[in-house]
Image (tube, rainbow, N blue to C red; front, top):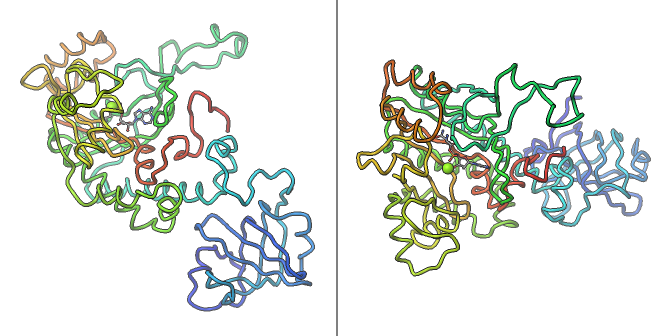
Length: 459
Ligand code: 4AD
Ligand code: MG
């Protein structure tokens, strides 16, 4: 008999004679010899009730096990007399596939803290919240591809191991080949580098994406990126996924327009296709979630220059922990103030001081700012960073030198300015940050299945 998924069964239009399901038991209770199981198989948030009457084949196999166990059930789908559920399965046969020791199984019926669940990241997808999170994460990934595909973008793959530092910030993980003789003896004499060259894990796919955009036109990359920033915050991870579109013949205005449309499209997609899972978050995690999602969907984002943003911050009468001074970067507290308390809507800050931005951003006519933009969302702060790229070789060279970088390392990047250079622009969206915004979950460790942060390398 073909297996039916719980989601399918729950959506049935009529009773079904002969149905087979496999999944994990969420709860088990017994009343007068009848065993009631709540079965979940990951296909949706709702469990399906299984009724096992005394004498049903295999009922004894359930003795001494319950929550967490994997089972196979065959029976009939029929209308449930119970409240709040349309269907239940009257079992004709149950089979224990994998038992779970009730004494030591860590997931109980009660609600567990996020902290506790992080310690059992291998089991937490079996909870309602993390099941919902991972289904939304999957749907959102497909929505990214769908968005670009509908607009004629090519999906490109950029390298994970690289010799160039895109952001020029130096916060990279070094890649070293394992030398069998020296392995594990001492970290200092551990490796051989990348066949004699220095190599690290990519912090961004942007530079290779620029090369591809300057051939294919509109491209995007969507992959893992790595940052060795030892910052123990709720929104930084050492490994995170980034979506990076890169568009030839585009300028800063084009890319700001696109960033807004992209965030709106993805948010709208999840609202439409993940309503059941999203409801869990608006009910249990963040009561203001629906309003916040609407604030993204219902209006254009505010656009404001960095210089104007500083004026707002200086004139607002508020004292901040970090200084507000032209030439210094905006901190999370500033971003959140602007977004949540001043404008009360999503915000795009553009034209930042050249001194705080990477070498590749296009220098503006005032020569003190660059054509950069950050998209800030309520609660999360920066979700997107992007820019128009410097397409003029002589200006790029000056910026490379000012940043203390070497021409040798960027020879190929300079080539793109020597042969058929065009204005182009792009951005990077932090996929986990978007998930945090969409679900209202406040810690990045809870939107990625196996977070990589300074204290989390297990699993
Ligand atoms: O602003 P960032 O550093 O921009 C770039 O890397 C550009 N090269 C992207 C481009 O133009 N193609 O990073 C982009 C986004 C940030 O806005 C943030 O959402 C996310 O990536 N991000 C992080 N997310 C989680 N953990 C971290 N440590 C992150 N660092 C950046
Ligand atoms: Mg940034």
